[in-house]
Amino acid sequence: MEISRKPKSPVSQSTRADETAKPAAAARPVEKAPVQTAKDGFDSAPTGGARGSNFVDRPKGNFVDRPTGLPPGTPSALPASAFTFGSGHVAVRPFAESAARAPVTLQASATPNAKVNDLQTTTSTVSFDQDVKLDSLKLNLDLAHTYKGDLVVKLTSPSGKTETLHNRTGGSADNIKGSFDLAAFKGESTKGTWTLSVEDKARRDTGTLKSWSLDAAGQTTGPGPIEEPQKPLSGPPVIAVFDGGVDFKHSDLDDAMWVNPNEIAGDGIDNDGNGVKDDIYGYNVGYNSGDVLRGSGTDHGTHVAGIIAAEDNGEGNTGVAAGKAKIMSLGGLYNGADLLTNFERGVDYMVKMKTEHGVNIRAVNASFGNEYRNPADVKRWTDAVQKLADADILLVAATANGNGSNLNDVPDMPANIDLPNVITVASMDKHNDKLARFSSHGDKVVELAAVGEDVLSTVPGGGWEEMSGTSMATPTVAGAAALMFAANPELTAAQVRDLLVQTVEVDADLKGKVSTSGKLDIAAAVAAAEATLTEDDTTVAGR
Image (cartoon, rainbow, N blue to C red; front, side):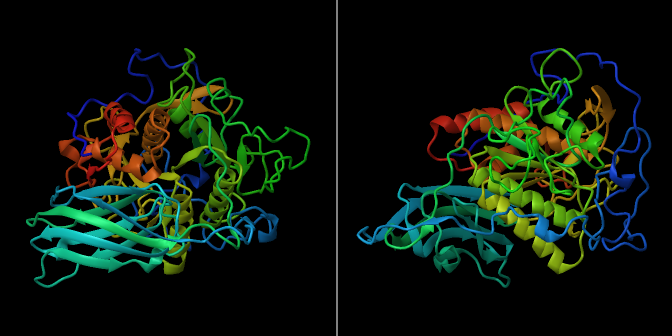
C-alpha cells in the first residue's frame, strides 16, 4: 500500500505525548571527559596526522562530539584469537537420503502503477509463501520513464541481500522494460517479502513503475546438509546500544535492560556457550568480556540508552520507547582496538545472539563514526553492515557534528553506507524547527533529522544531564523504530526504515539538507507500522 499521512508534530524525546514535561531531577555535576577525546568525526584523517580540510571547531556548552574511537591500526589489547564467537560458520544437519528433492518453479507479480517522482524512491513488494532454495531468479520489469539515466533500481531479498540491476545508464535511452537474470541470489530462500526499489536521482523526468514479477526456480529440501532454522524470536524488541557501556544499575534503566536468561551472573562460566563469560547485559567489544562498563565513553552510552528506553517512573526523563523495548549494551567501543575492528566484533556478537540464541535484536544505535578513505576499510564496514542486514537488524546511525558540513561525497562510516537497513540521522535544534548549528547534513546520505540539542537523559551514577549532538538525535529515531517493531513484530528492518522515511514531517529548513526534507514524526511512524497489521500490500513511496 502507499502510505500518506498529514504530518503531525513529533513526540518529545524527554516526555511522552500524554504527559507534561517533568522538571529535571537533581543531577550530579557534569563530567566533561567521558567521551573519547571529544573529537569531531572529521578533525583528522583516519590514519592520524594533519587535520582534514573540512575541520570545524567544536561548539561550546553541553555539546558532545560523536566519538570516533581509536584510529585504524591501533594494536589490540587482546589477540584476535581471543574473540572466539562469530557467525563465520553455518550450523548444518543431515537429511535422510529418502527425503525428496523436487524441482519447484514459483511466480509472484505486482502491478503497483506507482508514480516515480524526481529525487524520491518508490518501493513495491511481492511475497512467496514457499521456502525454496533458489537455483535461478528472473525479474520481469515494466518501468516507464522519460530518461532512465536518472534511475537506480535494486531488488532486496527477505534476508536483506540487495542487488543493483540498473544504475543510471546514460545516453538518451528511456524506459526499463524486459527481463533480468539475477544469479547473485542463488542459494537464497524464496520465502518472505521481496522489495523492488526505484530511486530517481535527478529532476525534470518522472515515470511510472507499471508492473514487475519474479520467476523463481529451485528445489525443496532434500539429501545433504542445509542451514539450521533460526531460533524463534520472542519478547519485546531489543535495541543494542553500541557505545561506551550502559550503567545498568541506574534507577531509570535497571528495568529497561535486556538480561541474558541463559547466563549466571558472577560465576565466571560461559553458561550459554556463546564464547563470552558473564555477558548478563551485553558484551564489551574492546576487552572481550561481559563487563560492559569497562572502558571509556560510559557517560555517552548511558545517555544514549536513556533517550531510547529510560523508564516512566516519575523521575528524570522518559525514553521514547519506555516500557516497550529492552536495551542491550555493547560497551568498550572506544577501547582495546580501533573503531572498525570493534564494530566488526560487535556485529558478530549481535548476529550470533539473534540467530543462534533467539534474542529479539531489531535495531542497533550507532552514535559514532569517522571518515575512512581507504577502499579496503570501506569494504570492511559495508560487509559488517551487510551482516546486520542479513540478520534483519536495523542500523540507526549518526551523521557527523560538522557545523553545517555537507557529507554527500564523504566516506563517513558507518552512516553513509547505502544498504536498505541503514537510516542516517541529523540533529534539529531544541525547538525542532531548524537544523542544529553543530550538525552535518547531506541530501544524498542523510535521511531525516530529530531533536539533538539540550536533551535530558541518564548518566552513570544515578543522575541526569542535558547533552547536545547528533549522538542525541540518533537514539530518538532508534526509540521510534523500537515502538514500530513493538506495534508490528512482523515488520522487517528495511520496512521500518522505509516507514520512518515516508512519514517525516517536512520542514522548510531541511530542504536540500536531508533526502526527505523532513524530521522525525513518531506518532505518524507508529501509526504507519500499526496500519501494516491489516494490509497485505506494503508498498511505500517516499525518500
